[in-house]
Length: 390
Image (cartoon, rainbow, N blue to C red):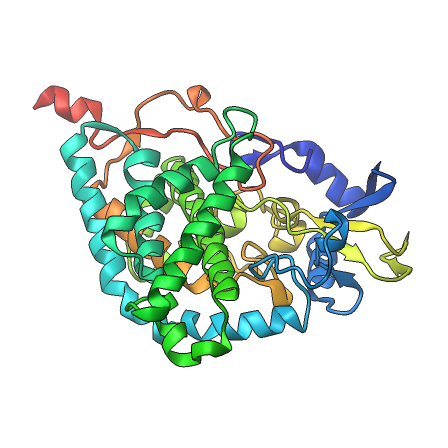
């Protein structure tokens, strides 16, 4: 249920469960109790707690604690703190500012491509996926000649059309690809994130750690941003006023924040493994139990006002959980905001009368996906009526 939706919206059952039982014991999996946390305040409390839970998945997979799993999501302090300290300086607003002209150029190029391919285009294929992919390549400093191979690996990594049998192979291959890129830049550092970290830290950061961090940047920033662009556009097309506001510089930040809350494309968090017996909002949680936080549930809580099921960028809402919360909050949140801001500004300015090219009921979505998305979004760049008159 936490991964199923009705179009853009979580199932009504999730809302009812959140309102009645925000810390809910779901079922036993392999003899382990799994709890779903879906209330806003309950979710914030769990995500902010650094002492009661572990996100280290290695014991669950039968791995030794000294095996490097890479990235930040499945590690605890002090390892998590060490790795995040390497990455965080590269995601400050000051460092990211150098990417703004690059982001604007990539957005403009994709808008040109849409215009050339029109009058009807698939926004997912022409706009939503290429933009974050190209931005990540620029961020990491991957040379142009490597990008097509990397793009194919990225597509395979998220392709579950064959039941996901190729996903793990693609993950392993993309990790190896980035490991090789790090090794090459160790000799000749590039201008991107990989080269910058090598220049600053040298041998204090291993190729294995840096390759894992680069892989985490790719995993965390590719499909999530693509889904935000496609689903965000769909949500805006349902509300002409919000679509227009997304094209206004003085309002676009509020629109982006509201879309991140409303859509919650990352539906659940990394699992939290309970480290000791405890009471959580009246429920007795045992050591070894697993907590999963439903971000899509928590972000539609009544804590966001009387109408949390609607997009309202005028509303005075509390901080959303779309980027997580606590020390596992998404390190690339500011980059994501930059991408979304530039993309929506450009899209509305270039195509102020954009509209769906098929009935909404014909759209297909990615059911049971941790990162929720739409498979295809055919849009018409200008109204059919205006073309008929012309």
